[in-house]
Length: 369
Ligand code: ADP
Image (tube, rainbow, N blue to C red; front, side, top):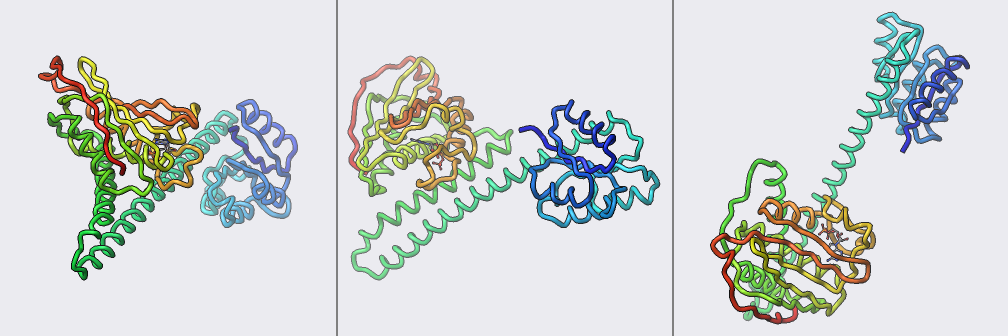
């Protein structure tokens, strides 16, 4: 979006000259002829910076600067003071009233434009930083909220179980909450390791089919209320090089999403495609799908597709899946369209000694979960 700059200048020629040069640099401009108009303009327009003359009739530039800094809209606006007063005392006064910069007339237009650019760039960086901080806070709040819920369930049900003769029937919700809490903690810890960079995940060789079945069983044991079914197809033992926790987390996130974004009693298929050096694990659901135009952003941190508001989430799962898959030498892709379900495919690197091995394929239908 074009940047909009407020020129506060009572001399018409000076204001016109500034407007001409700023517009040449593709800035939009608003002109205020006195202090009151300047205060009004800051309230009415979406502005990105102010060029403020000091010698204004009635309300001086000093006063305008002070009032803007006290207002919510003017508090963070870059203000560059332009004035014929070049003495040190005036410069110090302007800066201590909250101006970001000070230029004495006659000033070089080139220098002025450079200063404008510099302050706008800094303003952008600050805005981005605070937007990010806001997002991180949301993710943290979500994590705290979910962990608190899990702990309430574990504490509540275990308290009841301790007083009962047959405590077994209270174990299921406790187990589900504990698995969810563990998954959140795994996400958080793997994410912070990977985002710090430099640290690589320790790898081991294991059978990916065993891992998939194990994770699917957890969902089944979780006794999900929506009674979905996971069907595991087209598999045979296949050794891959992975970090166990990370690979598990990838599958947990993908299966959990397939469940979250699917209707009741929907089916989820997990199938395998073997290549010479890698094996693809695809998780296909019959859910709401993702619109084509949103697919390129789906692995971005905190991105949530339109329509996901009713489903609990922080937009972190797929970002983590993407980071983890790549850190193990694999990758994640998605095929989806609105209303047509989604298929997420993650590829794992095969263990070398198994690359040319062959075996028998099979199919299993997991129970409802
Ligand atoms: P969360 O589910 O916590 O919002 P994710 O990073 O796991 O975060 O997913 C990002 C977004 O991608 C979700 O908000 C949702 O819009 C979309 N999404 C992910 N998986 C699916 C799926 N299987 N079906 C439909 N939409 C999905």
